[in-house]
Length: 236
View 1 (cartoon, rainbow, N blue to C red):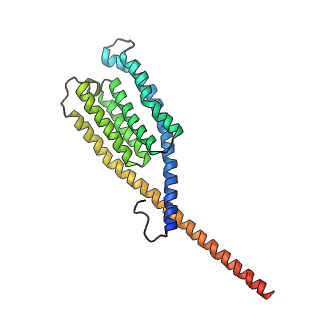
View 2: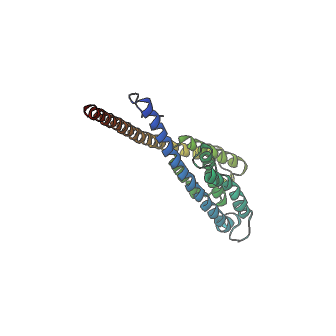
View 3: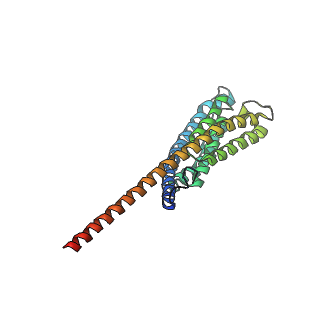
């Protein structure tokens, strides 16, 4: 639990606040898991459509043909989304699920960038994906996503630069420029995750304190009623 819980509260209240925080975070993250399951399917369909329309123009000139990228979109895209969707359905809210989803979402971005021939506009998908991943309020998920996208740009920049940058001979440090902008966004997204979690913890602490006060009032009322009943019995 973060420092939002004061040392002045009782251990029971502190434990109750932690319980409420975990319940709320788990429920939130399970909803985000389901959101990404839908998003991954939509991106998969968009990738296939892009392979059938954009890729032939980007790679083969104005010649419509069943290109290799169509098969990459169909088979490769399916391989990217199957595991995270299954985890979102059967293990929602778990740490493993959101990290797998983060990696798969970045791989989906990489696939879309590849299918559009490294168009700079498609790289914006990475930044949008990071913003969506911040919904988890778990900054470590952002680190997983950042490592995956940086590794993708680095490796493809070496072995197939045209698929990620749109040019055959980019500067070797180009991936550092892209990773730098991702890190720039991460700074603010991580801070938003920390603040969002603190707000949930503060709300949970207030609710736990209200519950404690309510229980105390109920005990006082019960004690008073018992005392009155004993007085009535004694005077009878």
